[in-house]
Each structure stands twice: as structure tokens, then as C-alpha cells.
Image (cartoon, rainbow, N blue to C red; front, side, top):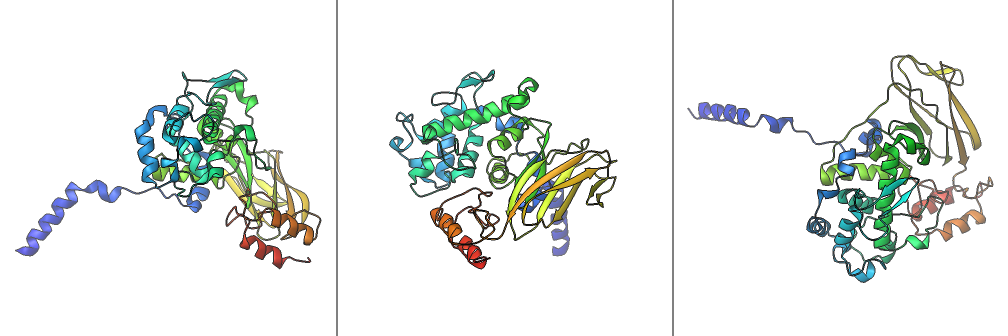
Length: 386
């Protein structure tokens, strides 16, 4: 009798809860992001531009819940334009195109209080991917001053006129909305080329080159702001899903032979990956060998480049080519003179403890972190005198 009751109960529960077993969380691992080509669709335009998605209280409660110092940072630390406002208020105002530098026109693209800039959620994600400010518990004035990474190019150095939290949030939000608006308007594409919706271009990182299809204007805007598939755009994508439930997608044009050229650089360790798009009826070759046959819309090839600067040409059966130029140094050869010596050590010492971009020559282990530390020194030492 007891077993019958249990059987009935199981059947009843199964009928009541069918959706529970079907619910599956999005895999936001780095491997899933790369293998599924989620970099083609970092966020939907709707989520990116949802200006009214959070109130000041919502923003404050969110950053307080993440345990970051930003939630309690006094206005005196938030830049000359803070004017007594909290970080949450500054983010809220910038999203609406108010105060700070979050207004203005360029090339006929105008961002103001009528248009707003970007979602407060997108601002929070940018603060996290640039300086970990949402979760960072220590009081770092430098992190606050460089909050959105605005005016700080990969080539190094930050323009002092953009420093300060309120300035950074305002300018960063304005730039991202400008990128999005220009990307969405065909008459403005020349001002943001190649970063506009529907276009394909090659993005290089420490481990290779990937052809990225900008499936919407928000994705194009983010890549123009941070032109790497790692780690900033990956962090924006995965945190957008994990923190705010943003949708995930891959996107694939399926009707283009990507002929965009690119240049990359790397050290002797590791191989170089080229990952791209093609039409279904096209064959791709490299050095006379078939890389991809008809039937697929994507292709990839991994190889070991030679030391020095060399160009590698991938041919399409249509007569088109894709060229990748790679500068490759010996492990530890920071200045590129072919030797690993005291000159390279001096450059490493000058950057010690600093955060540097993945493609900075002083970053000897970009696949691990962006800090010049003991891991870089260990790699450097192994190449000494070579």
C-alpha cells in the first residue's frame, strides 16, 4: 500500500513540475564562449539600451550586495564632477545623458538627455570588466580614476583630462552610445569602420585571430570600445548573463568569405589559431593544402608561425584571400632585437606589478593574467641569453 502511494505521488509531482527538468542554465565558460562563437553576439540591443532598467536605489543595492567599496565611496573620491553625488547617482545620471560628459555630438551623431546613453546594467558591467569596481573591496583611487578605461588605449598611457570616476562614467557611457548609434546608421558607418552591425572583421588576441560578425549594433559598439575577444568582452558577456539574465547568442553571417586582414603578435611558446567564415560552396586553402571543403560556413586553422614578422595567406576558391601578418618574438625578447638580455629585463622591471594589455610585449603570459609578475619573470628567465 505504501509503495502505491509513493508511486502516485511521484506521478503527481512529475505532472506538476515538468519545466524544472527542462530548465538549463547557459554555459558561460570561456570555452563555450569561444567554441560557440558567442563573441558574435555579446548582448542584444534591447538589453544594452534599456536606460530605465534600474533606479538609483536599484543600482545602490546591487553594488552594495556585491560587497564593493564603490557602494560607500565618498563623493570626494569620485572626481571633480561628482558634486556630492554617490556612485549610484552618477551611474543613473550618465545612463540618462545627464551631467558629466555623457552628452554631445560628433559627426552628426548626438547623444543627450533625449537619447540617453546605455543601460545602467551595461555601465556596471563595463566598470567590472575594466577595474573590477563592482566587486573590488579595497579603496583604490587609481581604479576609481580609471573606472571605465576611457582614454586609456592599448598602446599605453591614459589621457589625464578623462580621469575621475564621474568623468570616466560620463565619457565611457557617451562613447559606447555613440558607437552604437553610428553602427546602427549606415550613413555613419565610415566613422566607426569596421565596427558596425552586419559587418565581419578579424580581431586578434594573444592566441590567434578570430573573424567576428557584429550581429547587432551593441556588439559592434563594445568591440570598438575594446577590440579583443578576450578578456573584457568575454567578461561583459558572461557577467551580463550571470548578473542580469541577458540573452546569449552566437550569430553567423553564413553568406560571406571573410577577406579582412589582420596583424597579431606572439611569443615563441604556443600556436596561432585563425578562425573565420566562408560561404557553403567555397574551399579554403593554405600553402596548397585544403583547410576547409564546401559544406560548412566556418573554418579554422592552427599552426606554428616562424620567428620574425611574416605574412600568411589563406586562399578562397573564389580567388579572394585573407592575410594574417604575425610578429613573433623569442620568449622573453620584449624589445624585439632577437636577444633576451638586460635590456629586456629593464623593460620588465619598469612594468613590474602593473596591469598591461594582453598584447603588450611585457606581458609574457597573456593566457594567464594581465599583471606583470613572477610568472612573467619565470618565463623571461627560461629564455635568458637566447
